[in-house]
Image (cartoon, rainbow, N blue to C red):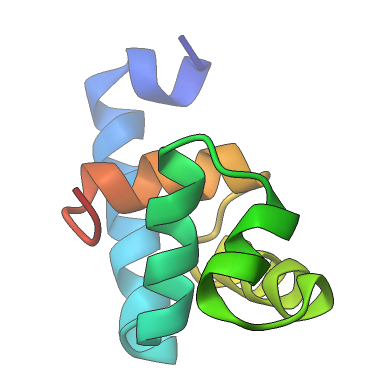
Length: 89
């Protein structure tokens, strides 16, 4: 478990930071949410691009943008954060 999530105070502070970040940038666009959902089901970027009929470069950019919006470090972290916040299920 990550150190910031093992301490309830640090975990709550981290969730507040994510909430503030989302308030600044607004809700994630539908395609970014779809990309995160498909990532959560184990699909690779190329497969997601084929499924959504967009290029892999577009998916790469959507993932990168979602990571930044969710104040995450990696795509996996962004998926976990989106799941925890109820943005995807």
